[in-house]
Each structure stands twice: as C-alpha cells, then as structure tokens.
Image (tube, rainbow, N blue to C red; front, side):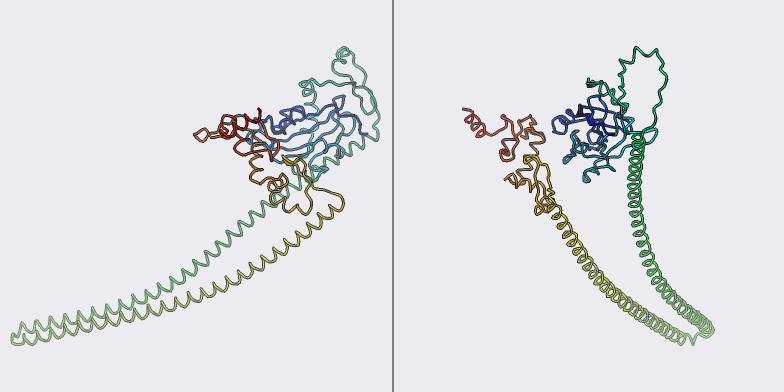
Length: 483
C-alpha cells in the first residue's frame, strides 16, 4: 500500500545518454528556472531529468520524468512551465522503491495531457532500469547535500531498516536468511510494474511506427514525383525524336534528289565534252569549219548554262515551298498544343479553386467544432490559464482564445495597458537586465541593471541604460527625485 508521509526533500537528477550525470536540490533548480543562474554546460542541448520527492527516511515518494531544452546561455527554453510537484500529487502509481508504490508521472502516464510531449517514459530493461539507476544514485546525492533521515526507515511489513553505520558492528555475524510469504500487495505491485512496462513499450512502439510511416510516406512522395518527371521527360524526348526523324528523312530525300540531278548534269557535261572534243578534232582536220564549231560551242555553252540555271531555280523554289509547308504544319501543331495547354490550365485552375473552397469549408467546420468544444469546457467550469511575466497567471476567456493564440505577446501587452513593442522591449530587459547603450564596434555597455518588474514602469532608453549612459535630462530627473 502507498505510504502517506510528508515531503522531506526534493531533488532533481539529469541524465547524459543512459547514465545519471548530475543531481541538485530543487531549490537550486528553481533558481535556474527563475533565470538567475544558467546551467552553461547544458547550453543548446536537450536533457532528460527526474523530479524526486523524498520522505523523512530519504525514500522516494514520488517521481516525475521530464525533458528540458536549454538555450545558448544555459537557461531553460521559454515557455517551460511543467508543475512538477502538482504532477506528482495527481499522478498514478508506479513501482515500489522501498516503502510501497510511488506516484509516477511520465509520458505514457501523464495526468495533464498537454504536458505529455515534454515527458519521457522510463527504461525497464533488466540491464537498464531507470528506477534502479535512481535507487543507486540516491545515497551519493543525499550524502553530497548532507541529507540525513529523521527516523529509521520501515518497510511495508513495519520491519526497521538499519543504516550502514548501525550494521558495521554486526558484520561478523551471519544471520540465517528469513523467508517471508509473498503477500497480495506484492503481487499487485508486480502486476502494476508489468502494466507500466507494457504501457511504456506500447507508447514507444506507436511512436516508432508513426515515425517510420511518416518517413516512408515522404520517400514514396519523392519517388512518385521523380517518376512523373522522368515520364514527362521521356514523353517530350520521344516527341522531339519523332519530329527530328521525320525532318531527317525529308532532308535525306532532298539530298538524294539533288544527287540524281547532279549525276544527270555531270552526264550531260561529259556528253558535251565528248562532242566538243569530236568537233575540235573535226576542226583540226578541216580548218574551214572552225568558225562554225566555235559558234556551235558557244551555243551549247549558253544552252547548258541556261538549263543549269533553270534547274537550280526550280530546285530552290521546290525547297522553299517544302519549307513553307513544314513551317505551316509545325505552326498549326504548336497552336493546337497551346490550345490544349490553355484548356488544361483552365481545368487545373477550376480544380484548385474547388480544392481551396473545400479546404476553407473544412477549416470553417473544424473551427466551429473547436469553438463549440471550448465553450462546453467553459460551461463545465474549466478555465484556460497561461503564465506570462508582468501579469503572472492570466485567465484567457474562450472568446479571446483565437486572439491569444494568434499573438500571445500582443494579448498580454493589452492586458498590461502597453503596446506590443513596449512589452517586448520590457521582456528583453526582464530576461536580461543589462545596459544596451552602444560603445562602438557593434558592442554595448552590458552593465548589470536593477530589473523593472512592471511593464508600465519600464521606459525604453532609460530603464535599459545605466546611470553613465542615460541622457542629461534623465540624470537631472533622477537627482531631483531623491531630493
């Protein structure tokens, strides 16, 4: 059965990988949460931690397993506000760590559901048990912080457990082992431990399956996109290849036609040359016919040049006509493709418009459902409270939740009766009360200042400046104020 003793001490333990590397009192941890002393060795890291409640016998009474991300200076991330003590008070039961089942708050057993993402489940393997690690590290931590039990510890069977100092004089004795019957409470505790282990393993399995499903879906989408691009490229290349093949066949036909014409002209020229040789031979034999041969030769040359010019003109006209026909056909094909493209773009635009309307309708339905659910929660007496510097715990009505979630700093600034820019400047001063006066070379004074706790009392250019860098008027006002 669960022991009901008062909280004697609170400890914080942090893990590095799979081992406990640091322990501290909760009061020291609270100083870090308040933004006064950073944990510089944990800067830019996310660590697993455990909040422990000890009773007056230095036995663990409650445990909350949390995660914390630190900024570059070693302070906890903004917005980290897990109420560890409250979580342990309302948590379910965990394993027995010496005086009955403890209160355990973890990710799979989180009493406040919206804090579950910042919790973690314990390791329950035989060679790596989180609670066994805590049990082994606890004596050293208590000795380090000089924590001593106020009275002897008792087990569930009310048998006192002696400390190490009390056992030293009796080390020479070897008492016979005493066997106690297994009670129903121990069986229930074993069943509870097994249920916690099953629940933890189930949560880890579901998270692993979800992560793998998301990765596989991303890979599938990428492969489908790449495949579609390859198909489109192949289709385009195939179309270009067919057009180039047709053009090549046409040019080959023209080349063959030109080669035939060239052969005919060559044959005719050879024939004319033979005839010319014959005429020259005849002229050599008969000088009187030389003049007639010259006239005939000139006539033949003119006739040959005329026929050659006419053939070239006909060939050029035929080629121009063929090119005009090809250009007209390609122009018609391009216009047809442009018309099809315009039609497809119109279809895509209509589909996108319909998709946008469906998304808007779904968003409207989801928003209406969310508003109705929130109002039901408000009717049940539930309120929404958020902590912000300058106003503390701020209760947000359901009607203001939309405005708050869109811009929390603007909402808080309105509650503080200041502008959003003024509130953000005050937040920077509140988190780091340092002088922001420029001293050249992109550096500032950085002198420590007295923090202004209220946004309304903060004055930009004065509250964030030291006395040496405040203006002359401000210095005079400060002197007059203390007279």
